[in-house]
Image (cartoon, rainbow, N blue to C red):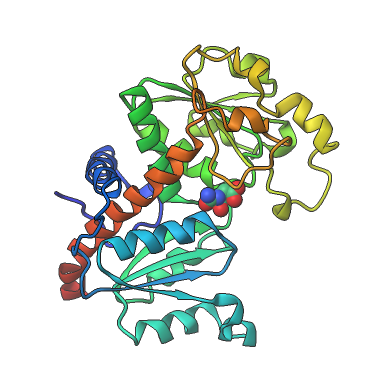
Length: 314
Ligand code: NCD
């Protein structure tokens, strides 16, 4: 398996064969994870540190389970309680941890670019678990695996990404990945939630769900990221749901077998109807969570395999 990378910082740096390598390896972990004995020792002896400077439920749990199933020693740093609160800089925290010889560092940070910066200062593999509004590569990879399994392929599909595109690192990583794999991406949302210059990414932009959802294979809903807004982006949640909330009625515009996705956490009744989110015939939201563990196991295995040579060159 060739995976010529030291870190996993963004989909931006991956080639189509790199993406396929991760997804193919992840398939083997989907099988392992469904067995009662789920343990492997591919990361035995290695130390994984999870540093989450922003809240997370599923991503942090998923990375922790992934590391433990592969036999790594996993430590979760409680960043709320750490010296960061005392004013230590990100780089000082990283250097302190680096001196403890971790092998894998999983980092989530509220600032775009912070994880890349940190990766330049440490002697281990860094995985970006979401940096500001920039990238969230393992989310796009788990979404890709979910789509590939549901649709039988990951090319020539029409995928609508809907809602708060402007604040979403999930949207950015997915746009990059789906584009690299030769799919058609449509972005649907109000102009206030659409980043400027987005059409340069080779996507089609729609303001209206009725037009945008027409005949798509995949509908990916995004959370309205209220914590990243300082007012004025939407008239009201009620109005937003009326225009942009996905319900069974709007879903009829997509292909009859279109799947519904959401990275979580969901605002039920704001961007998606709760009953539709739970409809196992249309929604693959729980599969996305399942694929997340498998994809993170695969990514960590591939990076661990490159550690020795990366360190020899450093
Ligand atoms: C996303 C994130 O944190 O970027 N969640 C996740 O990782 N599952 C999306 C979001 O917060 O809306």
